[in-house]
Amino acid sequence: MSVRNGLLALLAERPRYGYELRGEFEARTGTTWPLNVGQVYTTLSRLERDGCVTASDAGESGQQYYEITAEGRAEVTAWFTTPVRREARPRDELAIKLALAVGNQDVDIAAVVQAQRTDSLRALQDYTRLKAQAGPEDLAWLLVLDAMVFQTEAEVRWLDHCESRVVQGRRPVVRPTPVEDVERAR
Image (cartoon, rainbow, N blue to C red):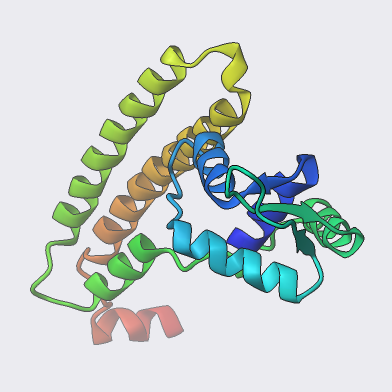
């Protein structure tokens, strides 16, 4: 997801100013994706340049509100209705780390897997605790937490699978003797 799409989604609800957009974005995502206010204003400038938002004159409060345009609504509607493609997601650092560890004789892959599993299980406990503390008014945050729980559970299952693969991959290969090869050929 891009910050651009996130800000457009929030502006589709109602006009907002930069700090308000940042605060609402972080509130809905449970600060899992903290935004720098400079990033927000840079993105708003680009959205304005691209015709997706218009900026109001700063009012008495000094805050400049941004409002979504028809072009911006079309862009955010397209984003909401387009599935997130698997190949468009960020690279998985853990998968890359394990893939590179396999070829390195100095790395204890089982220890890497176990360290990650321990951390992932600790994260699951934290997410479960956060879900218990959330109320029905925290629906957006609960959806983000659910996604985090399901992704972490899948990661733990994948780590179990990796550990099994590593064990299988390190078994000595039993090759038939030349006599057995001849007998098989008959």
